[in-house]
Length: 386
Image 1 (cartoon, rainbow, N blue to C red):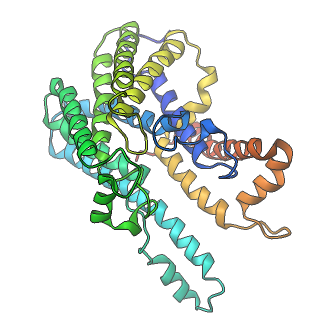
Image 2: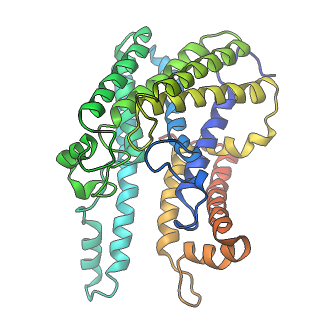
Image 3: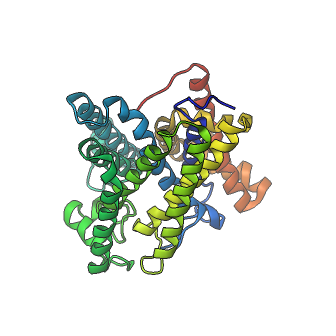
């Protein structure tokens, strides 16, 4: 058992690693047509295991903010403000860069037979922002981090749960009044994003963007719930007390999300308040379980691969985005010149494991390749802070 005076719990790194590995897994199937149901997002209302990885990471981000901001005594100072602003801008720009890479490489490959000169193709591909998606996973993380951090640094800690509740209430009213629970272009979520960013800058110009702007409101509250979990648990002296607090806190949030879902459906696509309560409750309970297993009982050998992902989470997630672009557009010099992605799935995975099994097999291989990079960084004790 680890010393109970230790201010850090290994389980937090493991849970972070599980969520990052899960995000990479579900984002990179071998075939978009052959995906097992648990590895797909819910169509609209409801929740699948895939729907939980992103909110789990957001909860962990809030939890980790307690550990990182307490060195500033949770006060807004020039140094704490600069840390928050710098990190917010950096994460947002990395998200934009990953989106731009798809457009750039796709435009470059697509114009190969256009007859344009090298520099014309380069300029045309690099500076075509007409369909650049502005929001995304990292962009929402950035905004949720930045806004919640300033709330934490400027408000008294005992008010944070009330602020989170107020944000949930405001967002619920917006959904209720603005037809936000309907999956159509009449939804206030779609209309707001189109008005602010334009349809060409959404995930799909014809449907609601799952990481749209208004969804930032409950996301901020979501991060605050993670921070409050850390504030309640990490101020306890013993590991046993921390585990108990996390479990009780998680159970309360989980039950609240389930009970309130009768009036406010659980939906990841529009990030309903009940979705936040439900997933934060599960994340807190799972963290309590992992803390008992890993930090309490000392059973941690199995968790090493997730530690690798957990210590460089955002770097490995960004790396997976770069690798996905390369695997899609770099071709293998064999018959038919398939992309690396198509060659691995169609020639190696699907013939051995079938369409569905091969799709999962490719995703697991993709996670493994990213994990190998993470392992090298881990062994060399290189921690890339984003």
